[in-house]
Length: 256
Ligand code: SAM
Image (tube, rainbow, N blue to C red):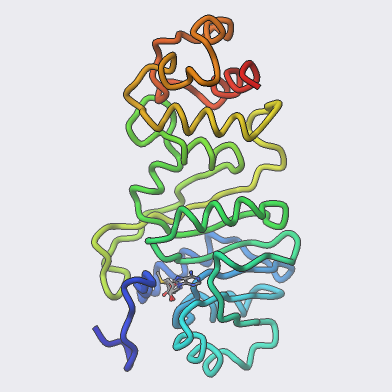
């Protein structure tokens, strides 16, 4: 596949958005004002960047591919409110407070990117990203189904996630195998539940979902006896997918 002399690299998740309707939908959904500072992840050939710079006060666009970095510098270099950075987003530290993060991010590293951003959440107000539809469904999943797991709980603890709309795979070139979802992750000012120790909470969640078909009396043995689990009012024979974030918080507080 050749886009104006440019050969996309699969390992960098290079699927470029060319559907103008979807571009406008994304820009509208981000609800930007002239006061906003934006961090764009993976600007590519600048499909979204050229719209973002017209609205926001400042845009930092972080692109790993040196070829795209050079294209962006020559096509969008005139915008004084745009700073183009040739770096791996997983190594980039946000310095501007109240940043809005936006991006059609590479699918192969979507989960590490989300984790990296959430680890810097004190600098972020909201994250707008397109993800593989299946991953988006796992992020917003509620207890009781196969989509629900550690990722749902981690993201829902720190943010309020929602799917804004679906993007058909045909909106990108080259066309990815699956459809995408455009997702909003609104950073919570305080986490969704309060716990004595966050680390214990996520250790327990990971241990429980590490063997999701087993009862928690089995998988949480190292943290809590069956008797202690009973003290929370939760049945030790329950499986993790039937426990809410509040339930995990109760278990963590008793273990910690
Ligand atoms: N935003 C463009 C668009 O919508 O057409 C491109 C989207 S494409 C799905 C993902 C972009 O992320 C590519 O430009 C790719 O080179 C870039 N990318 C991949 N891995 C990256 C990383 N670790 N850090 C920064 N950019 C990365």
